[in-house]
Image 1 (cartoon, rainbow, N blue to C red):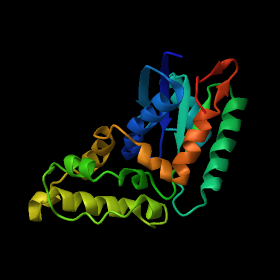
Image 2 (image 1 turned 30 degrees about the horizontal axis):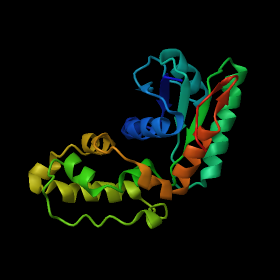
Image 3 (image 1 turned 120 degrees about the vertical axis):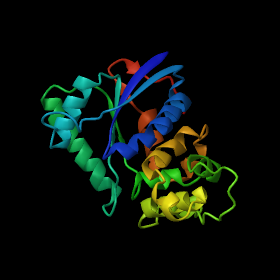
Image 4 (image 1 turned 180 degrees about the vertical axis):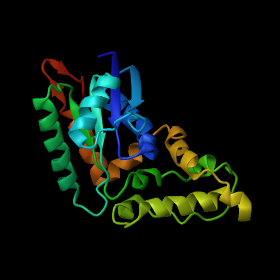
Length: 217
C-alpha cells in the first residue's frame, strides 16, 4: 500500500506527541510512502462521547481512516487490563457498525515514558539546545518502572530550559512536550521497551480482509 490514513484516539491532547512515533513505526513496518495522520479532537463537540466505544464510532466518522490507533496509558493498572478495555470497546463498536482495523497503544505508566530517551530533542524542545544543566534522565532499561514519568519529563524540560523565576513560570510546558517527538527522526531506541515491542508486533500482524501490510518479519 502506497498511502495510508490513520487516526489516533488518545487520553488527552498532549498525547498528540504519539503521532510522529506511530508514523515512524508504520514506515518501518509497512513500506508506506505517504502517511496522513490525524488526532481525533472530540473535546469541542456539542455532546462529547462519554464511553470509549462511542469515541471510536465518532472518531472514524469525523476523521475517516484506513487504520485506527487507540491510546490508553496503563498508569497504575496492568497493561493487559487496558488492552482488555480497548478490545471490549472495539467489540461494542463493531456491533454498532465499526469496521476499520485498529491497534492498541498502551505505554507502561504514561506516554511520557516514551519521550525521555533523546536528550538532544529535550533540550531543543525546551528552547535551549546548548544548555548544560544535567537532566538526570534514567536509562530505557528502567524507564517503565518509574511511577511518574510525566513529572520526570516536566522536571527535565524545566532544567533543559535554563529558565528561572517568572520566565520559568511562562514556559510553555505543553507545547514543549509535544515538540519533542517532532524533533526526533529515529525511534528505534524505544524497541527496548515492552510496550513498544507489543505495538510493533500488533502492527506487524495487522490484517483486514485482503488488505495486508507488506512487512518483513
